[in-house]
Image (cartoon, rainbow, N blue to C red; front, side, top):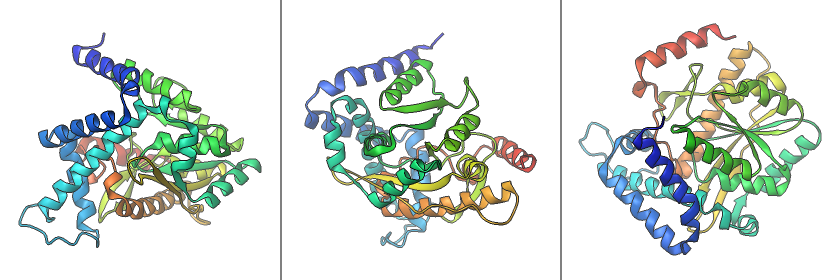
Length: 329
């Protein structure tokens, strides 16, 4: 049985998909911007985690020119707060566009998406020749808009994984939403093992897209990320090692109020030496390095309201991860 809070969440998301698309776009944008500002001012848990993550970006970003204040964070507090508000507005835009997806035409996405098409063409060439491709993305920009673009550009469809959210009714709404866009969505729990299904798709020359800057399992890989240790999923790299698919980082961002940007980076090759575990760890670190560069270039659009840095994680979960990592070859 769903709790009252879960029923309210389900009703809110249902109203989002049924009502937001009926509002004039300027009015909807103003409404979501207001909601983002209210959430930002309330300083709830998600905003606090976001600011903790952004502190790491600012500490290591040469573009952060403001002198640090005397706070414990070591960064300029005003700059941090301004940045976190901008990110919350960007995050709100992601949800706004998800709810309005049904009234955003394919023609508008094709015209408004700025992508390095040479890399997209290489992706399609790999797939045509029977080689699978893995797009690994950070939580940036609008994943669904980029998904519609690559599907329309020629990929046809792709496979991805989704965390099983609570309440279940909200998860089912997001599942149906992404399936309607042309995605095959594998839940992290409650279905076939996602890794095996994705490996099958890749060996068949298909595209797999995975958000890869936060580990959802107990088998994460520790990487150097903005000057600290963070926990990234091993799955994208391990899939490339096991199937021979091309692992290509991708970053998405918002260009302006009506357009989007995405960059498909060069393939991260499988190292020639080492065990499967060692190869996957080296590739995951390379992935983290690319993500660092993308986030620094578009830090307004990194929507990371979850804990990723080791020093922030629950010690028991981290201990389980390290134990599992030692036992997985």
